[in-house]
Image 1 (cartoon, rainbow over the protein chains, first blue to last red):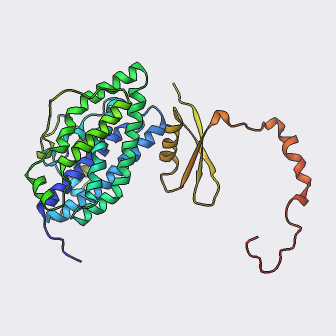
Image 2 (image 1 turned 45 degrees about the horizontal axis):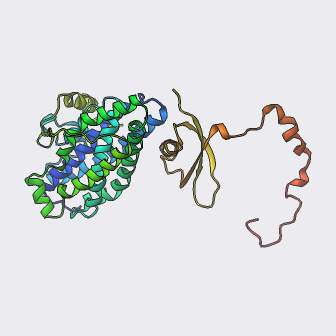
Image 3 (image 1 turned 135 degrees about the vertical axis):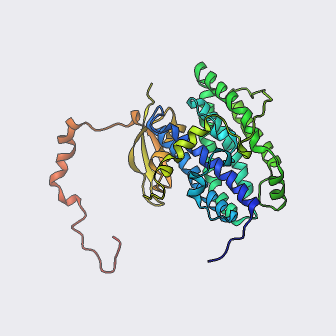
Length: 255
Length: 92
């Protein structure tokens, strides 16, 4: 078996992407058996399953490159809140369907250019995950766009909720484009996507959807952040408890 | 409020006809197509989907079953079973 060389930078980056996908998928699962129609149940859980698949590959890669012998399960189930590096936007409570849709729109409009860029990553595993993920997230964006337009350009009540959901989630989107030393080093090595190139793509995608949906671009300049360094929102502990308790209650259990 | 019902047809691969696979609810055609993708093609069942409003499907009535279908019952000559298959023809 070939030895994978330790690469802590790429490991940390893969962990960020994996945590984003896993936590977002877990949040979408809150809609299981709660959607207005069974068709939406299935649709939301399909999105969640796509994200879970991405997370598995990314956490596995993070574990390999970290060189401490941790596998995807160790990383998913045995880390506490401060060790999670997902952006805050994916852990936000989904609220009503409009807010979940707003979160999906803002995240998918970022993951589409992200994975498109990462198809050319110098890390072969990231490039491989990207090749698969780019088609999945294109559908996620289409799903979010359809519902944003339907709700935003729907009844007065649906438009009010869609705008409110958008206002709630909007400030958190910008953490996705933050540049820190880790990202700088990896962009220079051709491993990571350059966030400064992703943001204009994101903005034009989102603004086009909002215009079609007759929604206003939020004006707030508040920019909460902290997820990348393990400082999470209050609800995150509950989310992790639900995600991890079976594994922790029955260590080593398998299907 | 419940969304309208749609009938879903999936073509499993090129060259085959679309086959009815079930129904679903969706507010419009755009959503119906996406719901059909999510509900009926999650396991690579299809390469093409049709959705049709269930309301436009005109169905035969069970009451008319006798005059619709029974007359065909005693006409075996309509089946292509009276031809001899020429030798060497494999896929007739």
